[in-house]
Amino acid sequence: MGRSKAIFLGPLPADLINNTLGTELEDGDVVITARAQAHIALDHTQDFALVMEHLKLVISAPTYIGQSPHHPEAFELVRRIVLRDTSEIILAAINITRNAFGNYDVHSAYRITQERVDRRVASGHLRNPKK
Image (cartoon, rainbow, N blue to C red):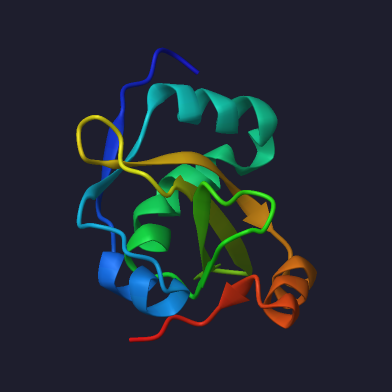
């Protein structure tokens, strides 16, 4: 992967997240930095192309919203992506605080299994969005 630039992914659905998690996030855009892209490319090599292709959709229309008890500084947006011959589930982990520019940074994104989604829903870690 060559030198990447930050990519703006669109506005954070702050109201949807706040209604679902009880947070008080302010409006802002979501961005994935070159550093986060490099992390995904290195740590989730098999997922990189799929994640980058669908990340805007994961952000704009999540199937689930959650906050890991292990990462209180971040929240998660999860979306099932239906492809031609299969479907995949992508998780985007986003910092809960805005950066110096007023944006929210994606710090990781990767595929997860239906079993992991089911466990996280059962534990209350992931929830259906409250519109």
